[in-house]
Length: 77
Image 1: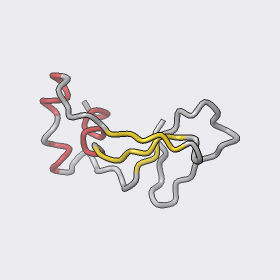
Image 2: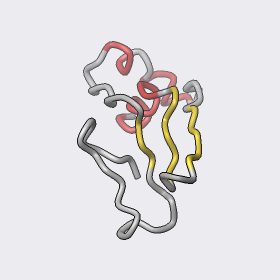
Image 3: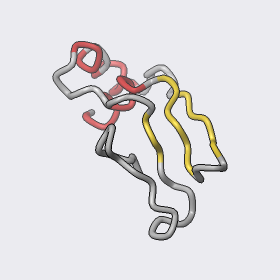
């Protein structure tokens, strides 16, 4: 579950238990972004570069460190 609303998105510890939230460190690219457009073939083939996540226990969620465009392409494919 991706936390949306950058930079105003927030994590609610009381509503979403289970630590399934993923917080991007920068805005997610739009489907029309050139970086996202370069990945559709790779997404269909299942060869996208990995998305680098980091668990932060103080936030009780994962942060996306790298792979924002790949994640956006995978969600559009």
